[in-house]
Length: 110
View (cartoon, one colour):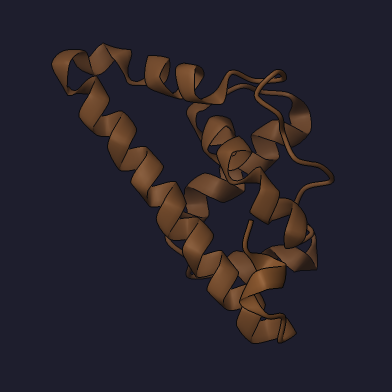
């Protein structure tokens, strides 16, 4: 990863998102890749991905849910928890980008 990845240090879900970015770069579909794909618009803005990953390339939410299927009735809870973590990551990244670049909310928010 580039020096730009330093912006991720200390953010919620940092290790998962880093692994997801690495998986996306090599074309590996994993739970982590799905979470990074969901966050891809913000990762592109931070310069960590070259482009936004579209749903047509990876059915991110379905693949993510399937990755928790081994949990049986707890799969939905784990899926929702993972999505909440990504939302927390996205908000923290937005805040950090705003602080470090001085960009307004309207420029950073999607």
